Image 1 (cartoon, one colour):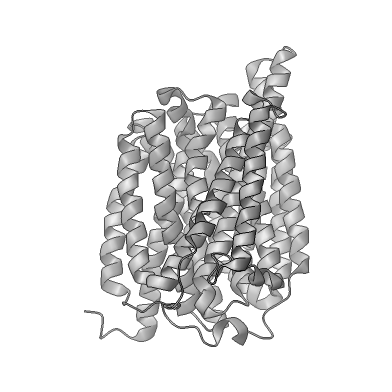
Image 2 (cartoon, rainbow, N blue to C red):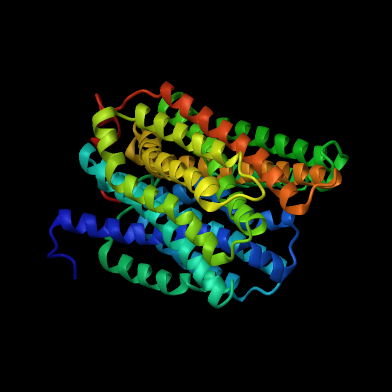
Length: 481
């Protein structure tokens, strides 16, 4: 049915399908943040255990991202993209029907698995379909626009659905989107053979790295309750460290490693992945904690929380699709990435002074505007940097690596900063502070540490090499997947 389409038009229509799939993933991430207080009240989560509604998703998302990208390389990107979409959509139905904490967290974990496959493969397809530097920058700008625009839709839709119906509908909204994307994918995206058909999966590596990261986050999330020096916490962290060491050893010995450590010899890969960890640690904690700050401290309902996030998400969307791509073409990767992350750090620093009796215009909006501007400028160049020197046969792996860095950084960062906020809140409460003031004090400490993470990532961006003088390294042999 699409044989008559001009190749260029087909390519851009296919980009639309891929971005619609990514929209569903992003929508789910931000829509949940707005509904967290309602989920907490309905299913009787504690503030510490509530983190697992987010972390169950991020852990499997990040833990299986490398595997998801590799599955696309080995078995075909289109086939695995469809499989990931189907799994994510089915898990969304389970989340929407969940009536216990355990069922919701388990379904969120399955969602993360499907989302990992969709996200890793969609980015790989985009990088392979758009091989000319200027066209690729525009395509990545569209991808960034969808990611940020999905955040805008998510916060508004989350507030609307939670306020008018119930939090269950924030997950059920994925069902029609998933069905539409699957249908359009079958129509527009052509079948293509695998890019690495003769290689095998590194199952041992996938299991060890996923278990390591999950145990580490579990230990951090429960550190306040169990005690940071308790045998339980130290034992879990020790096992996590041992599993990570085993993973690194495995990757040096298997024929086809899940994460070839040789890729980290490329400065662009090493630096951009470290930046991804730091940036995501700051941004995920900002989304999670600022939603709680607006609702539990300032007294906003779910709809007003969604509206509170809207300025940042709209600015992210506008800058991702427009200014960011132009900045990359004119200035390269280093300057926009460094400047964007430093602006985001400044926005977090403003949140770090938010008082218990704060107001939107003075204490919320300025930080939101700076975070939206900084993230919108930086999103495109960090993804381009991560894949700028990688061969097409490893594009799925490279996209999986950078997305893993984002999700693992976000998961671990959220666990650390949420636990830090809970510790400070408990300390202030023990000293006699009223609950709103104690909560605000905890959030301020977490925002301040997040600002340090973002600023460090911005400074590290100065270490990147500019790929513009030799675009053929990443693009000359790329092909549609």
